Image 1: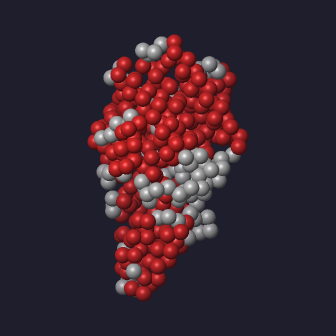
Image 2 (image 1 turned 60 degrees about the vertical axis):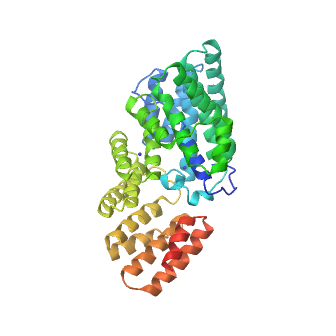
Image 3 (image 1 turned 135 degrees about the horizontal axis):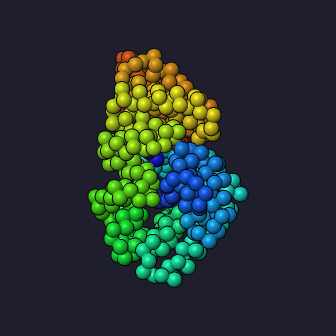
Length: 402
């Protein structure tokens, strides 16, 4: 359960962590189904988390039209538009936020002008309405939570779509302050822990000089406490529970707590059965955990879902699925099946990092067969392609084989 910008810049090796945290903080609103704007938001959230973004946007436009002075409608619409933009770019998987090839992003075309304009209009209106609520009742924890969430969404967009990572991080300081204010006013408001906890986590993982800068501007740190706060948000079962779960999938993978990530993914799969990317994340997590048989089963199930799903795909999605299953089958020593998958992973629509890592898996497969020359050849190609794709982890592993 868990990716544009004029973002042609290269990032420093740790900055993907900033993007990852900002990615986790755009909160949609879950619930039931019906005619009120709250129920429309609930229906839209279910659609969005099941990858039906276009339908979700239509429903939320209805909510905005029905109750234009409810900032939550504007914020939910902006959040769903943001997710749609990320989906169109293909940067929506945990792989994109683990800190390797995200140093040079995927295909960073500008977002569709109409969606970009609508997002900015809706998030600005959400912030305006939340600010009025806070001005009218400064001790209202819910008002501060709504303001912090809307400002956090704006900061997320700056980082993940416009590519201004540090600017987004700086802009997010206001969101962090508002979330801390919520907890000061009402410590039982665990929803605010998603914002505070994820920022605490990310600050603790930054290089020393960036961590110092974050402390200077007022961010707190503490990896363990940050994780705990996100976990508490999930346990509280509030409106942003699902967002917190997706955040935990990313953070657990970063911490190599794969069993915990799988537990959360299993819960997400049950609630959002049409979201094939949750299955992809489960299979990918199993690959990272070196659970080859489990990964093969999950990814085979997901590939069947993909074949039957007529909805839009992320760029290079077919290649990504087959690279992942090929890696699982290399792990299992199933040579012919692995070769078949890895060949599919080299398709013309494959992302550069997928092609590079596919060559790395072919090198490993060659070593299993005792073909040292073939392994060196594939490893050299992996090193070259991964270098061009700014994937230093792949480059390092390819050099070790050569």
